[in-house]
Length: 298
Image (cartoon, rainbow, N blue to C red):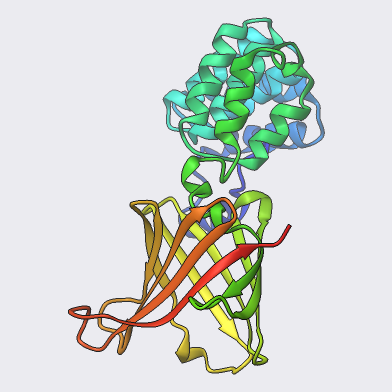
């Protein structure tokens, strides 16, 4: 989470096209304030930002920078006031709430800090925020509180229960046809801190393939992208779907010819059924083209 908004390029373009947004004198003060901030000269930076705000009291960026400078001076009450003004005037909510929570924690106001952190967690996951909460000394006194653990959990990406819907497929499996004959071996692993499942398939006939499987919280869907050692990408269109009555059902996009549908059903902790169907009439009728049972290898 940057201390200073990344707006140097946009600001340069604005100055070239439209001229400075401040009068010449104010622009000089802004340059001096930013230079003091960059040099960690917090007293000068805070004084100069205060001077600017006397003219530009609704600028959320200046309020945020003033709050950051006040925090660095351990003037936590003044920092919170400035940061709350930044939030009020439209500064991005994630960095603003984090900074307010940090200032509140530093001043011993855990109740306010928890309030802002809980609102922050409701905005969505962020591994960067989790890392800061675990590392920044201001939050040390809050870490034994169960609420802190809940906030960390809610902020950690891919922790939602939906990301675990396909976990029944994870494991090292012998794959058999319905007659009990071995047709291959498959290993499914969790990668990227729980955000992705990776399949590594080897068939007895020399076929090999891998797939990545991931949940997209934007539309609550699962996607599988499979590629094999034939190099024929068109054979394996992306499959998209969801958990349906305990079975993972993924299909190719409507209108594909033929349409494909793959279904994974948990039978027990040590057995999974995988079945594939195709349709040549846009999903009116389906024909089974693959049926197998996964037997967990222990």
